Image (cartoon, rainbow, N blue to C red):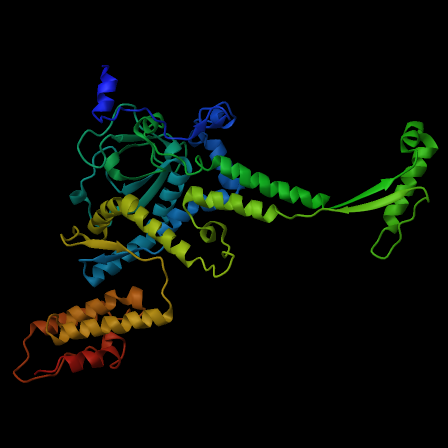
Length: 483
């Protein structure tokens, strides 16, 4: 008895090779059969390497511009909330970030990374050599001067010189040589610790090596869909010229044209006269044997076709229709709120993945330059939400915030200066208590250190808490009464 017969008799199942697709070779249906679909494949277009094409698309197509700009703009639009810093230090950092246009520079860093596949934001520290590793502790007061944006084509990493130390920069270039020929840009060799690098879309290892370590332009995967959308849009526009066609049938037209001379001149004069007479209230004058017809073109189906192409663009970017095209969604009960919530979640994910670590490094540099001291151990920050709250929602959050602080103050879990700080920190969300002055908080801290005489319930003067002696101070005094 053969081995297969013995296995079948013993109930052992024999391995069978299967394909993960449906195919009918008799009907030429399915992948791998003799049909046109089986001849389809994917090829590498390398659009990310064609800088001129990318720049032409960015300058000439508003859809491309929106596709490139949307994510970086939303990633840097709302800023961050600091924690672990004194209120006056927070104010100083925020003012310096505004003065040196830090958020604008980070936005440009993300834009050109999306367009070209990579970009650098170089930290400009006065008096230090770009080629040396950055040591944050050596940065003096007011030494940081801002960020210089250098896109992928403005620098050239030396081949083979990569970071070998374990960490997030492993495998990336150690230096970047500036090759841009412009008077305001220093021709320097820049160490990787002095740059905030942003890459485009992720690539597999060997493809990333083929791109000299950079990422993929966001335009490359959507290039064919972009061409289809623009072709359909321009084609639809061309149909406008043919929306109303008129035909004029002339007897013996070929003979008239062939004869030329007075006959052809007479025909041309007749056509000119007909055009002059054909006004809204005019008449069409023609020979009894001539025929005149008007043909109207219908545009049914064009709107659905353009919408489908537009939705494919949105899908290729992972971006809602409302954000890319700036149009409200159509359809029954369509508000776009769900799509925008998903988009904000994607922005949040990209902030955490691409911006958190570089921004923390930048803030460590700015702390030494702006504050003259390193960041505290408990320092942290959170990206502000992009979903704007209504006035009613802000008021509700403000009431709940005050109640929570009041309960903590009543339970003596916090003191008055801490309560004042918490109120001021809640101002970006609630829109309240933003006028609490730093010197008022400092006076409250000084007063809290001096123990009051037994039985005394009088509080230090905190009239500058909100600019007058009412409102927020009154509830603090009531909750501070001795039991």
